Length: 497
Image (cartoon, rainbow, N blue to C red; front, side, top):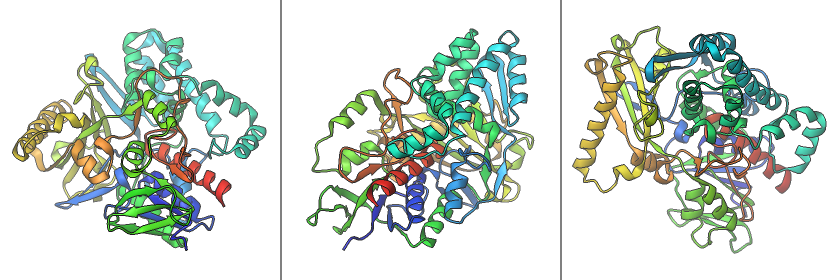
């Protein structure tokens, strides 16, 4: 007998959306999670009265209208809902040469502010961001499901041919190409690089226009909405909905191997205690590198994966500071999210750009009374943390943490003197707790590519094995991996059941 119709490896948001979308169709799903809670990089941990988000607190997909509100839709599918808190601004940029821009929730307010800073580029600014809206409006007018299922593609095309043709036009294009059609100012083009980098970890020339159309527009359409109780609530509530529909999630269970063909001809997984579980299909929410290098032990790397690896590489991981600070350290009128960069040349370098989230400005319940959470993180490669003794590793963590704190005092003066608690995570921490090769957060191009055309979908060269998450189309971000979950579940349900 099968242990489940579908086995999902990992309970990140991509895996949970896949599982819940299958469960509501009556398909029995078993999710295997090696950690103690669901959510993956959208999880949480608690220390000294603080509830810290593991990853970023800037959340798309919780709008109420249209089709791009994928987190809202994923929860609603299993009869669940999370109370959210709207954020008035997406991010406050603190960039070189005094370039200080706040992205307001209201589109016209943002366009006016950016135009005031670059008055000679007002027309170009409007044309560029309107092009992003063109992409978003196309996405927002069609049901977002698997691009690998031809009946879906035919149906969507005949229902809305203009939207589909609009997306086809932008599919091979990158943001930089579109921006340079309308904008000439080098500093403004650098700003658009940063607009892309904060969520794609790539400059505009390498960031697909399809992704940018979603992000640059949805922040004004559905808005940035923080889940009350922290980002970890998303995984918790999805897991609750999964079980409500008769499927199961097991914690503290580590998958050591994917078995493409078991003795009875099914696909299976082997656990760390030697148990073998079988199913009709297996979905890996691990990265493609972990899936094909570690879990498929007896299989040679498929040619399709070799081609993909020639085009994409692992994105950097992060050095993360989870700080608890006294409330006096933070201006109550501050934005929740900030980006700090002092030198444009350092934008893509390790520890160059600093990302900051202060979720307690939206939800004070996450910290003890009179205190705030400051989550600061910056790109970092695992190679810089290897071959250190335990004492050297701890010393380097502390040194790098206080370097970042000193830089953050440009925004939050006297932050250090109001410090109450500090937890430092490195790429090794992300690898250990999230089970991601080198602590990576997805795939980035090795060179300039044609938009999203080279990004793999959910199916793989291994029969009945699927991938989901940030190393599949359409890449990083909670709403993006939710899309991959919708697509994967639709593909499996329509072709296997």
